[in-house]
Length: 189
Image (cartoon, rainbow, N blue to C red):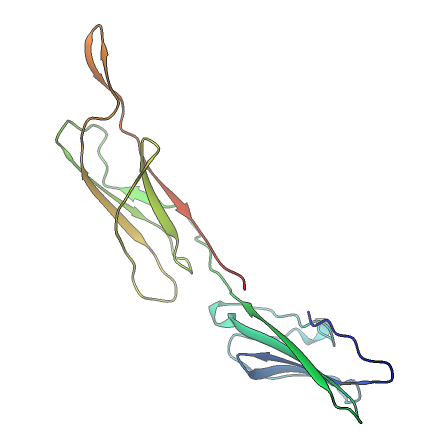
């Protein structure tokens, strides 16, 4: 949306929209047709829904992210102009829950635990965290470099004593609960 107000006696000459400094839409009320759209990578204008205040985009994809700017110009004699800009980020959310593989049902003291967690593709990449018995675990992750990222996180640790308690019948070891939370984040500036 491009909000503007003209001074008394000024007429609107044009409203132009840019993505990363490339013009993709123009509204000139005295021209026929009054609206014109130009091809810019990642931008597809719905002209029948767009006007001097609003530009409607369709078929958004990752290439649609960028710095958008509208520029409003008054008619003669002043030809004064103002502009405003904002950054738009398009995100690709994971389509599936994370998949944990490699775990065993039972572990003994001293066993090595090796579990893999893989998220489905997303952009920006999902942020994954491991928890053991609701306590965060610090691990490193590997991320492939591509526009859509499927992130894998491998945890390897040695099974140690967790929540041991002595019962009348002897020593009891509580279950080891391993889980992973995935947080997806995005920024809008």
